[in-house]
Length: 155
Ligand code: ZN
Image 1 (tube, rainbow, N blue to C red):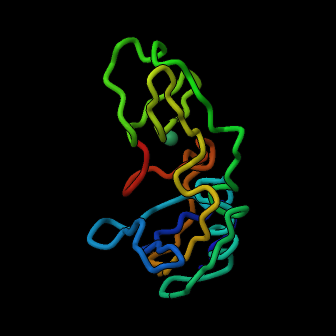
Image 2 (tube, rainbow, N blue to C red):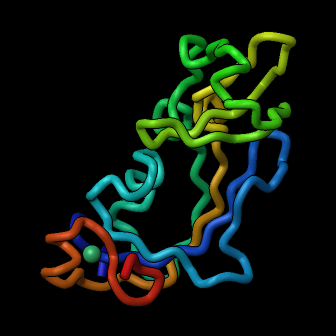
Image 3 (cartoon, rainbow, N blue to C red):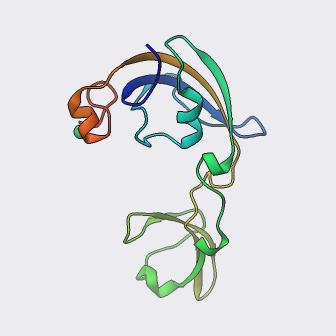
């Protein structure tokens, strides 16, 4: 069975940057199950996996445009320290924003705090080692919900 729209695929993956640093990996965990064709994975990953079958191993090099996006300098902002309501703020801390996003503190000044709303992997070229562990049909519920149920799923 080939990976195509509305198939559920299970994959093992290791993600490295161009220097060979491992950024993420499913090694030692359950494989990642996902519903194909619903944008559950980054576009470059779904395009690379399309049409492949159980047992396939491959390397995918994915540009930021097909990964977590390019960095947008406009998403780096200074906010007054008072916006944090007296909470201790340090470089590297992450905060949830009102609209569900995440910002990372990149600098703390006397009166202002600089926060970056770019995804941590924005602008990064991604190198994936991927192995297709399984491919199956999705249930009607999974297709209706747009995500996987059961092993590795949402519920
Ligand atoms: Zn569901």
